[in-house]
Length: 113
Length: 116
Image (cartoon, rainbow over all chains, first blue to last red; front, side):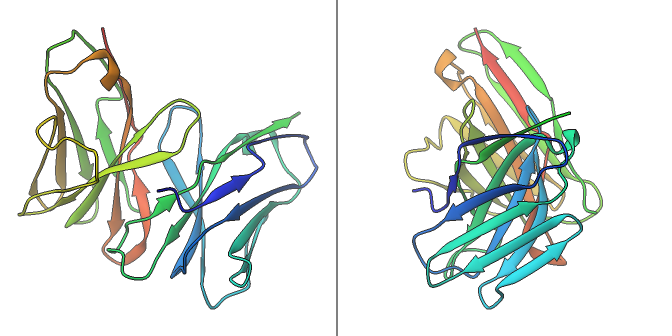
């Protein structure tokens, strides 16, 4: 069954604005990752946050993790039209085989120029 | 970063034929590869875990005789959709964890299969 559930399902913003996407999960995790998918393409790894971390930055990306609420957020600052894509959270849980991630349903982000 | 190449990018076939999809790790060895299926506007559903030198592990509800997986080398895994039917039409994606960073996955570009 799907572990992560993203919110919102779709998000439309203007270039320059910030975009925030949320992800909730159900069981204990080892780490949580965010991936990006352009239409009709494979996924690209963006950032990984471990269960003992609360916040992580990478360029214009900021990820938070709240294990008590079993939730994470991805913030993209100063968005660009090129950020238009679907974003998925994926969780690695204890006892799972390495690399076996469970993906959420994704948030489709549209950034209008 | 690590590169995973998936081929073909798209394929159209007649109902009843078999289609083979290849997934190669180009600059690293992958003892494990994952195969997913993705319907339009939906998430990735793990179909099976491909293990080099041994049998693949299939997720519940995935027919192993329908979706044949072979992982004969450390850089190549193949998924064969046997006797394809229109309901098998979907986007298939493979991924592999890099040996040095087993936690994150590197994905192929996907294969769009259309069965007429």
